Amino acid sequence: MTTFVDGPVRVSVPATSANLGPGFDSLGLALSMRDELTAEVTTSGLDVSVTGAGADGVSRDETHLVVRAMRAAFDLMGTQPPGLRLSCTNVIPHARGLGSSSAAIVAGVALARGLVAGGALLADDAELFQLAARIEGHPDNVAPAFYGGFTISGRDEDGDFYAVGSPVDPRVEAVVFVPPTGVSTEVARGLLPAEVPHADAAADAGRTALLVTALAGQPEHLLRATRDYLHQQYRRPAMPESLDLVDRLRADGVPAVVSGAGPTVLAFTDASGADALVGRCPDGWAGHRLEVGTAGAQLS
Image (cartoon, rainbow, N blue to C red):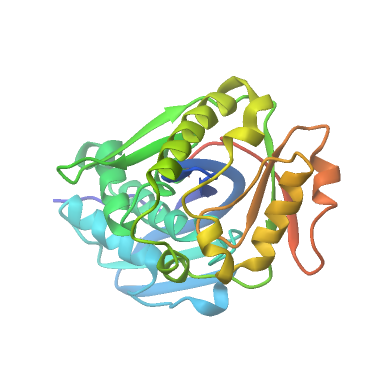
């Protein structure tokens, strides 16, 4: 018989930035902007409360993404609680390319395991990561949200997902520029061509490999390493202001990229240049100075 823990369980989950320029659908980085969620088992029903970013646009029933992820994780462990109470305090902006959906999914599976006594014996980290990636459909944001740090992830021919961590030089920081309106991932992906020139694919592979090395300990190569050939320019019609900002920053030697599917712009910097970079935030946008490669989901 399954035993549930007494009292609430809390989880903190980071925002993430995927692609990072050339690493399309493979590279992801955890950022120091975190959602905080609390859940507990009740005698019956479902009670969902949401405050903060995106609160006006999410459901409060079984279709809520965190609840869906929790239900899937409970199924994985062979149980369902009689009732649930969930409270979400959101900081990660929605539909901005900062991994809000992956954060919700990772939070849900982590909370569910935390609510089951001996949950780690019923579903280990590898199983929870596989579940979270299946729910999201791809692992590039889920991997850093779950494990933290800088990750290289993908999907094998048999359908299993993988994620491998890579170091991040402590000198590297990030500034994100968040526009006031979002772009859906579906719209952004719909602009991508079915095929790209072989030369572009080869160039992108080289820059991706260089980016792993640059982040690990040679940040002087980040400008060259973040040059993308596969997706950003194709998405310009959906986010022209974002790509214009990327162009301006890169022209001044700043390693800037579209974060995930956009429209947020992420720029790499160091401690000496971060504040000045925040000052370049366009009117009406929000600029945030963030640490990179921070911890993944943390349960308490």
